[in-house]
Image 1 (cartoon, chains in turn orange, red):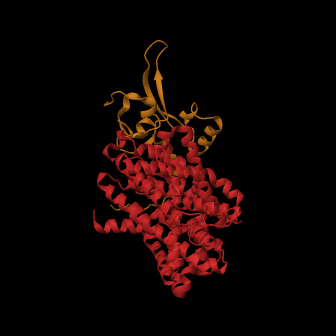
Image 2 (image 1 turned 180 degrees about the vertical axis):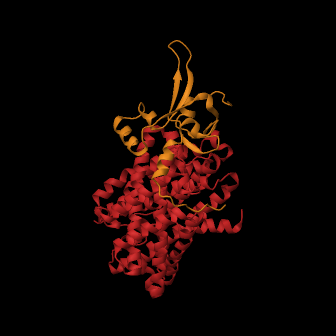
Image 3 (image 1 turned 90 degrees about the vertical axis):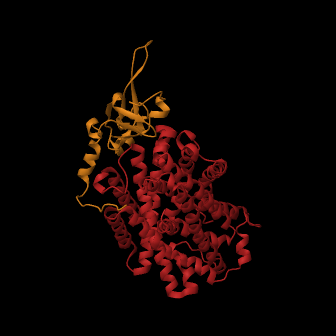
Length: 120
Length: 411
């Protein structure tokens, strides 16, 4: 971990997440905290996926989001965050955190015709 | 930077600048108000240069595409509102472009409008699926350069240059009735919207991220936005001015996109007509692809999905599904029988409402030194950025009332 002092709501939440292979794999949709009243709070995980919007959106908007993007949610332990810059980078590939499943489901809906590789 | 690469980038920006809304509104504005709205095109083009340059710079330095930063800066709720409005605006615009291509193909081939719109959509899907991003961008952008015939035609018909030059001075024509004044204002707002369409910024900045721009590309960014957009804008000025010279005095209201092509037919006959139609075909087709991909970029960036035309369709499956669905929806709108001209009108009104929400996070991030370091907005970019921001807020507030009061500029 190369994280020093971080502002969770302005610096981390709603930031793009990339995995170890620099693949886009979601947005930090919410942050999970742990602690009791009178004690210090500890960040335990980042929550990824539209399911994490439930407490952030009005009900009508949540229904709309679920229609477009589903309502799944994955929990990535905070210890798996490698560093934070203009993106949040994870220590391992997206699949290890269950972040690639929706892409897999979408892939099955596409016809199996290949496109050309883009030349540099 | 290779000189060929630079030239191609600029030429692509020129050829890709014009779309169906510009063709319709510029021709109508010229016919109705002569040269009195030329200055609005110039004003809006400078605005497009300012925000285009900013979005390219942010993509190169902060590596953030527009919808990533929008959500991060505006938050989930306001970001979602912007996303929905953008999706609606881009889909309507895409439908207008498909309708425009259908009309031009109908004029070129004589086949029916509906089969031509369907065939065009199928070709768009095939090209995005099969061809690399750069080929698509350059093919449509460079073939769109046939539009230069409009500028040559303007010179050939020898308009009153002195009168034309006065159009560059900000003005409200004297002696207009209240109704005409409202219509003049409506056309001014529509031109600002058509020139500064938000999809252009989404598309441009996403392209910059895909091409992995860095500090070394800031010069290319500046040249493309200033020279490329500037020259592209000259074509729209030429369409307005030719219309003022040819259609206005004859009492012709060039409502259909195809009418503008007659501007080249007057001085150059069949060849001019053919070149104009071909230019329009590729320019509008390029815009159809850009608007559709802009939706795929927006949704993917908002939800953090894999995205990009550099990836094969199966490597970014949700991105691919979105652009496929957008094409189907846009074609569906066209097949309901709504006139493409009406779609173009709805597109400009909805788009101007989205502009303030699109450009606010861009302005904030471009001025943020913690992300942009020494490339943060200087005083010129800051002053121009906020001045144009105020302008688009006023235009956004005025757009809907003006649209309703003038029945979309028809009164």
